[in-house]
Length: 523
Image 1 (cartoon, rainbow, N blue to C red):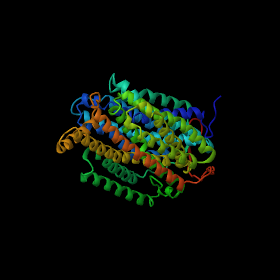
Image 2: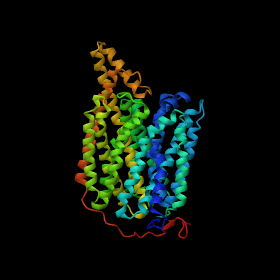
Image 3: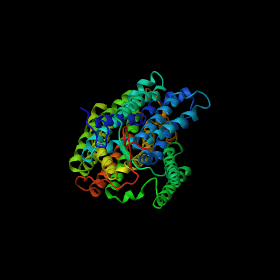
Image 4: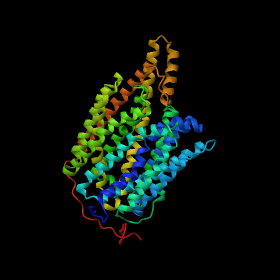
């Protein structure tokens, strides 16, 4: 027997399944493309910068347009925007897979990867807004634990699926999104989710400022691995981006219908949850990259084998996220968020101490513990932050939290990447000197090796000392990650309060509309 949702939809579980399939594409694409990078570069003849932008364009576009996607969902209708986002994402995936060979290849794939990011930025806040409005406040922790657990777990599927599909053709890593999109659209049509929204004018001035601000600063962070931090262009981009974001925040306070209600940050729990999420995201997304690199370079695993390494993390993540959601429903966000940060910090600390042994079997439980800590804190923090918004602002609140998360992830990749390369090069230099190579030559050779293995797709001929030196660099990164999660625990301990949030009354919302089947459709 179908369970009728409080907002009038046919089935809560069917709505949840539809939204999981909708956002599954965005999670899979966070990791699947990086596996096929060598094949894409070879077949299309891309430059090293071009192929990096085939990966980065998606992340940059996703971060820049999340706020727009959230606001669009709240004003145009969540279901409508999810459908639009799925269609944009599927169409751009098809076009990425159809990238022609020749001079246009680089521009083609980078542009349509960016369009993918716009589609993802549209569908994710709208999908999460639908889930939040479909489930009552006391049920949301459990529902969103399943949402984030299943959808987040698909990130680990990316490398495994990517490795298998790439054996056929790298183009299939984009085309796999099309059947997922068809299933999502079918489930949306069957479940007919009903949500409230309030038509309002779009703040295009704010949109231009936030896209430019986030775009420039994230571009600066991403280019740090290509240009290096000594290049003044990095700092010009970051400074200009931050300045534009400051102007954006100031103007939004005086805009009648702003893109983002900046005053929402005066809500202490919302601000603290976003701060905790921002700190945690310095670690969460970068871990996939560094763990995959470590598994392939130091452990000598294939791309699919690296996916198994990440799968251990998500085993802990998916299981613990279910407990985190239930703890949120029963006792509020503080306990699972604080406990999760502490467990995650311990997991990364234990893992850091084992990576130089080059024994995957000895690391598995540490990886599971780190994943469990992240899963325990992530769902309650994200859910509690969105719960602080009014019913007509769930998309906007989701857009804000996702913007914070992606911005922090980009910063984490840049900073931790710099630490990794510097430590790797330092250990390589010491190893070469120990083998009798003159210091000057050892320095230049260490620099060459560190850059080569940072971008190489083949690890079958990596010398043992290089594998070990990369493991030492990874150990430093994981220790830093442990410290970052400890800092998140301190913020949660000092900033969050105990207790369950009480449901608020329906806000007074003139010109309120419902979208969905039957009567009450949006006009």
